[in-house]
Amino acid sequence: MVAGYLLAGANHFYNPSSYIKIIPAYIPLPGLINLLAGFFEIAFAVLLIFNKTRALAAWGIILMLLAFLPVHIQMVHDAPFLLGGNMLVTPLIAWARLVILQPLLILWAWWYAGVDKLSIDKV
Image (cartoon, rainbow, N blue to C red; front, side, top):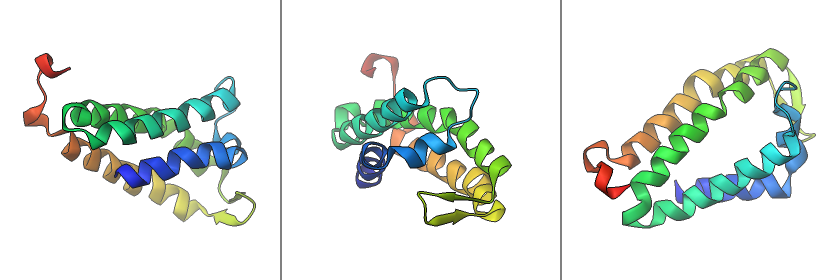
């Protein structure tokens, strides 16, 4: 999970146009939103490394993935389209990202959060 979010976060800075393209038009400042998403993906990945911050980072990832849902809904709406100039996002891929991948990533983060380990005094 750490490596995945480090790479995904870094890609927001390396290839911003791919992300900006899929941010819904009703969300203001897509360039800033993209940078913030990349920053938080990297920050949460780093926080996942340490036992004391792992649960907090996992909950942050869950909230971030929920915040990304409008992007995935927009992808369903816009499909088919080219992402990054070479990857065709078909309606099937867009739907799979929305109803399979996102829930699995949320469940994975929830597992990482260790619900039984999180208490108010640790936050």
